[in-house]
Image 1 (tube, rainbow, N blue to C red):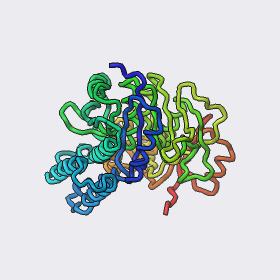
Image 2: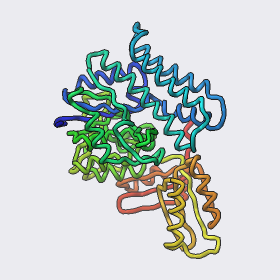
Image 3: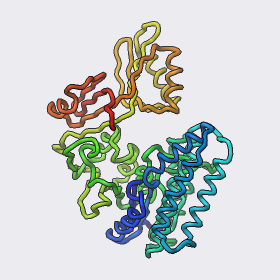
Image 4: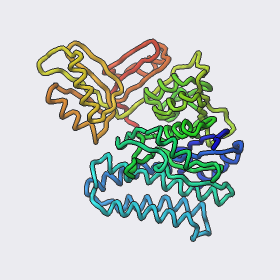
Amino acid sequence: MSMEGLRVFKFGGASVRSAEAVQNLLRVLRHEPHGPLVVVVSAMGKTTNALERLLAAYMGGLRFDEELQALRDYHYGIAQALFEGQPDHLAFVALQHLFEQIDALLAQPPAGPYDYCYDQLVPFGELLSTTIVGHYLTAHGVSNVWVDARACLRSDTSYRDAAIDFDTSKYLCQREFDLKRAKVFVTQGFIAGTAEGSSTTLGREGSDYTAAILANLLDASDVTIWKDVEGVLNADPKLFANTQRLPYISYPEAIELAYCGAQIIHPKTIKPLQNKRIPLYVRSFINPQAEGTVIEAEGRTANLPPVYVLKRNQVLISLIPRDFSFVIEDSLSRIFALLYKHRVKVNLVQSSAISFTVVVDDEPHRLPAALAELREGFEVRHNSPMEMLTIRHYTPWAVAEQVEGRTVYLQQRTRTNARFVMDQRRTD
């Protein structure tokens, strides 16, 4: 069936963190032009963080009653505010069913390693949020169909970083998002499912990627990511002063920013859109009338200001062969194979004759095992916590302002990017 005119909207956790936020989501939908629409919703507020804490307690054999009760109270509190005076509303029945599934999962011993258990528990954040949002939209005249993303996005078993089977998913999505059933669909970001029926996730902040995948598979006209900022800025306003909105950027520029660690979009988001030349809009759910940012094939990116991207919780690792041999292709292939084996994300590399340095995410469930294996063939030195600052389109003034007076452990400069690894500043 033709999907002509279909649009995809993605709402992140901040946009549904409270009853008032969900009410605002409805106002945003009503403000936008009518037509077929897929609404992709993340977990509410900081629910993913809460579920990760709950998982840590569960995997560690610790008590998690308080964490689970807080999760239950949070979602029921939002639902009670939205469906005030309707204690028998179907939304509460659906929430009860989901929490019964959580209870049943946690009543059993862990059924596998951390990554597998993560993907069986953490997706409930998105299932809970979309259940509330879908019922609220229906109650206020926006007829919609709730779609379980695990039933239409087929993935492999790379838990916590699943790869999507686009061919199978295309068939499943065209079946699930049938415009004969409805004109508005509500579904989850971040999650997918295997052929065997287990849940998977697409990587932290993966809801943007979900929106891009669905747009590609359903031939959407555009994607809009609704944020709490007015478009793509040249820096995180929580970390840097005097930020500027970038009205237009190209697909390649967006990919570079995401690769550097910019949190505005998930790194994998652009490719499915670029493949079909689908424009991506980043707009403010706080001020829907604002222009936002357009990301497209022919983005007008000349004369961009310096763009600052700060990645925290980094580890600087230097490897020196124990026999002091040169670090050449054979050593490098062994190092990267080992890091890939443990799924350690490398953000920067630098080499010399007898040492090799990488900067990686501090991933407590992956990095220690990788370091232990590296020590079998290398002397390993590491520093943490570190932060890595990338200044894209840098100027001497921009570098001096950010780096002057600080100890820089490693720096790299290309024609476009300057990157600095430094001790992590305290955030309190």
